[in-house]
Length: 375
Image 1 (cartoon, rainbow, N blue to C red):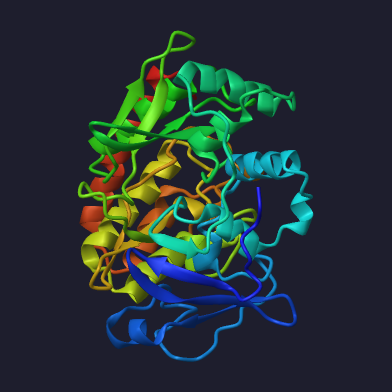
Image 2: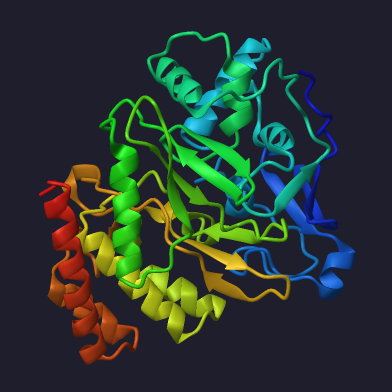
């Protein structure tokens, strides 16, 4: 491949409109400035760190290697980063020499959310994705650090994805889907487990995307979730993770659920989103989903600049780092009901509603863990 010339920076687009420009400073930091036309009737793409003003915004080096979180969210993470590094090496490039602007140029219009980057760099792909079973087998080989002949197909399927587990983007007559494959640490029936978790979350009145099990001849099925950052019309929605909004890395436990409620309040999402977030917090606690890090909570922004909590995602059984939740509850990594109620009171939720909600969600989760034998 030939990397795009990003010496003069990258233009950031949202749909057909230019949002602003990214350019590297003398210190190696990636500065951002809104476009003058966007300033007239656009909105802040991150009200925390990028308010809608004409100033030149310069990030700190940490935690995103000199990049603002809003743009770091666009980069592949975990599995996608592993694939990108392999593709760069195949092209004779040292991944450590490819900076964030170059990587954003490679992402182009394929990243999560709605932000797109121009000019684009593109790999010349020799093949296209095959069946899901073939992709799963190739992913297994990559995770085992063995070379494969169909790296192009795997990268084309999921090269811009985030998260640790291998995945592919799939489009069919029902819409755009993210389909997950087992990692080297997962049981082979992880797809069924995550599917059951999603159904349990729905039973707890938690907003989740449409989900399904994609058929397989190798396992019980691959878990698929419809992309909520793409509307039925095909229009992309701007999306930011909690990690991006408050500029903290998801790789280290650094947030409390109290902070998540504060983010929602700051974004003006309203009391209904506070209840949605409380339900999700209770589900994570009682369903033993302790990998609830700052990349696993996101907010969506519509074309008018109004924010709302995104549907819940990445819900599954996890022990977390040190057996504790990545996001604590009032400072406790292993919270109890009293902590949930204390936080509910602090954010203005009624105690009677909170107690009833806790009871309902705990019952569903106890049944889930019992059925799946995950106690």
